[in-house]
Length: 230
Image (cartoon, rainbow, N blue to C red):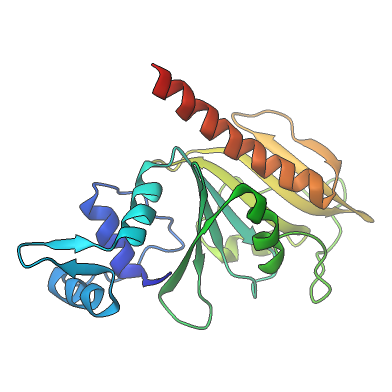
């Protein structure tokens, strides 16, 4: 699914959702009339004759973004890689910038078995022969940045290959930071859990990094299941 940032922001606002990643929030919100006309032209809303109705698959995406308990933002050190935000639920919804189409976002639903393939296709797992981070050595300061509000914030951390920020949906509070860094001559996974815990480092493997992401997904599903029972 491809949708304009303004249009997605508008649909989320209609659901009462105010959490839109800063990376994806449009500078100009636009008029409601213009947005409705564009949504109608692109087929994301339907006119029943009595009211407008959001097309089924897009309604499902908006529901998942507004209802997800957790957001995982993935920012690659290589600025040529597109930003991706994951919203876990029964499936995962990936919201991704479209670098060749300004102001547009790509939305993709993923089953658990398809997450690895998707991340590999986006260059968010494994080695990247076209770009390499610089090595980190002791005394260079904090390994991971406290917060990312712009892509340029990673420029001061050239040893980071990839940074995944795990946040509570609907707030700006980051719960965990999971990074892949070049530590001297090897790749390592860095895990920082807030508040103020000492970073955990372990050797990087594609499988281990993917497992870290799946742990976040499983925790969301477990909490949802417990909520259903009560």
